[in-house]
Image (spheres, rainbow, N blue to C red):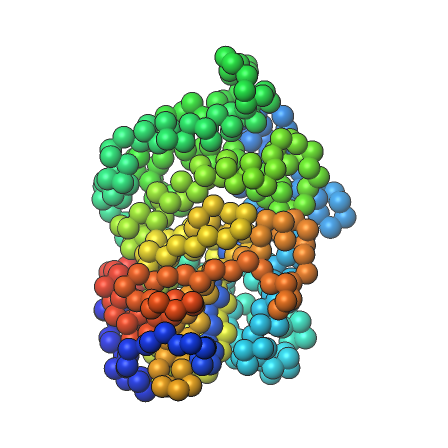
Length: 446
């Protein structure tokens, strides 16, 4: 059953007055939706494939005993530890805000977790649960049963909820770059040069640059393209996709805590990783933040998030919402593409220390807080982005209310007001969602 535009349910709320900037925060947290990315993992490609792109072997990530982890896209022990640390921080914050009570067994009745089905994602969710509700028993994570196919929230294309027009996708991306993909290679020439020098192990300042070593593929010289892609990567970006695959391990090497000599073969600091990852971020930006692609791929997630907030505000069960009206904490764990796509749909931006703009960091999360003004009764939505810095991840830094992860308030265009937390009246948030969500790419069930 396909979705229709969201009803302007804000009219049913207790107050529809326009929010004004308050000199102090008189709001009470009623519900929070934490939409997070998986933790630090092994690379997306096996070392045997990656070695085709470099003259040095990529390092192995250790398991709990120190032996090499096997498999691609596997949550590392340190990645799980960081996720549990983050869950512990949210336990402190949510208790301070009054949504949790420190009685984990009782609190679990008002908490809902849903994760994409890949082991990397479900294990991340379990680690987060362990930190947030350590005494509540085994993690209770909802995962769409395999027999039902793909999860429509995280994978609406494979689930058949949304349909991508491939020609439109190519045109939309081409329209952002003037129909000239190779112009991107010129714009990002410094990042490509740094990538090549790392992969082929020569000084960045060396001139002329050495020829490609025998038997190796120079991913930085493969032309960028914009062509029909797949449900996994909706546009084929040619060489840019292979560059992203080759550099993907570097941020994981650093944040997992591998020795400095193994982070980019000893040639990358956190700053260097941030620079080189502009290429990876470019791929995500084009394939998932491009307005047409974001609208098709993220409308179902957006619809369910908005409806869940309305359900909590009204106290009435609402089709297409997650959990129940009494649920206080909703945790959704997916991939960086899920988060980048939703951010693209709502035109959300953020900037945290140690990252480039709009990066969906390992374990990082978009947060949607439903709050109610204690003076007017009005409901507001407060959006923020929260993530451990790269060094907090690398060092598995303990987090407390006094020493939290990095966070930034997020402006919702057309909705946020001019206060420090960029609050957005719920009724207005719903109206904006009506305009942005594609009713043909969302449903009222999944």
